[in-house]
Image (tube, rainbow, N blue to C red):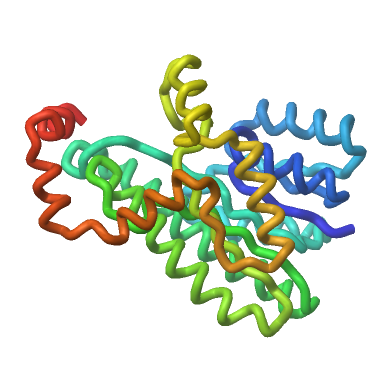
Length: 263
């Protein structure tokens, strides 16, 4: 049996990825540090789609997380054909107000664990001459946003990493797709239901179901990258063209300075 391994599978987009891949008949290896949510997901996938589901409860920011996950799959003979590196942390704060431990965790989770998971599982895929890797970056990879400088920087790393990895692996019949969503309606955003509804209606925020469907479709169609949503495409284009001096001027506007002083 071929498996799809999804990190951050217990909620949000990761949960939707698990649903989409289970629909396609893949066995699921769901990875997260939310044990109860993983067990609920396992029950739902098993009941609804009749697929085999295994869970790995682990801190993905841990030093040996990627190696532990890979070795567990080897021991259990779970052949991972699809790797979805989805787990992430979004923390709004200026660098000087961010706990150094949180910074280390974000960098480890987004950069180190993702890189090592790709290293381990891509080697197996190369031997089998088939495989798919989906890497979750972000629209913030195009602009170093204040208050999420640490987050945006890690997503920029993933942008570069996924692009280079595609060149290294595509000749071995291994697809590498990077996804660059903007705002997604997940628990990462502390918003009221009314605000969420308005943002979804005007296209600023997309649902995790829509992101997952489009991401999986892009991955299986062999696309190198996907920026989902018209609003996000426009924002990425604008951000790529904003001169540094204009951006600096915006940051010095009084309302923006007051906002930044509180975060």
